[in-house]
Length: 111
Image (cartoon, rainbow, N blue to C red; front, side):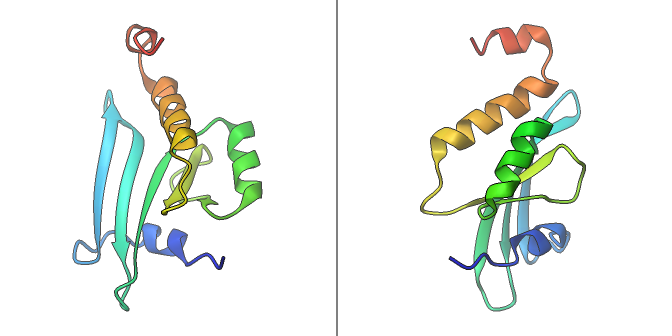
């Protein structure tokens, strides 16, 4: 499967006519960003950008599509959301991203 230029489109998502962005924060620090973009041909894509531990990030980036390295920092990981998305893995990645920023009181509630 050929991967579209999702990272390029995510990094250009400042144009509100071509994208929608939702951010999820803890103490004013983002643990997840959901981005929906559309290019000039009408092709759309949705991705999440979250925080990941360095070892896990590198392992997932070595797989390639649907994982990519977005702008924003060396701890960021992008995941293209498709019909084949492994939602169990996405849940684990989101939970770990949340855990990285949340205070102990909140992470204790995760179990």
